[in-house]
Amino acid sequence: MRATLNRLAKIDLSLVTGEQIQRLWDSFRTQDYVFDDTTRDRSEVFLAQLFAPFSEHFILGDHVGYVSVYAISRLLNAYVHITIWGKITSHEIIESGNELLSYLFTEYDLNRVTAMIPVINKSGLRLATLFKFKYEGELRKMFLSYGEYYNVSMYGLLRNEFLGGKRA
Image (cartoon, rainbow, N blue to C red; front, side, top):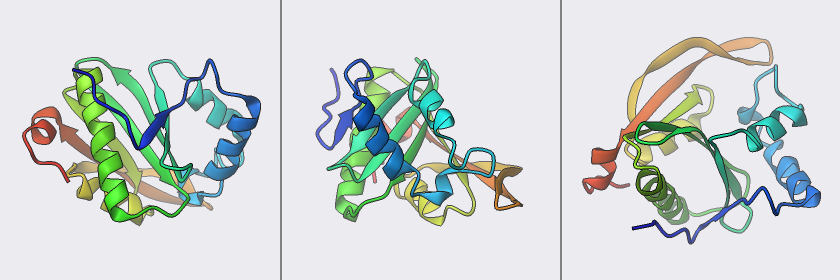
């Protein structure tokens, strides 16, 4: 059974136009927490991620955010990164997140989904806990922002935790 995507629009890279990619980049780059000092204002890094193998990308709602799922390894794991730049209600975030997780666990039969979040991204950390991701530790001084190094927190959600009725 395939999961339905209602609040997320999957980006079909074979159909996307240069104008659509530019709009996405222009929105994405307004979110400073997404970039470290080595990637800030580097559109080629964004494009490499967008066209990376074993990845899927989605527009959230009415172009209020972007979801990147990368390093997808069927039966094992995928990494997820959510960027929000527009106005969206908590209810819409919860529904969109549950829709995404249901899709990933169903489509790829994943055992887990992982999120790596710089500790300076407080809203990202709250979002991970909202979706019942479990804190699994930190990678020390892995994120460089404006000359200062920050830890990156690792969060994980197991298939049985999500499908077992423990949704946000």
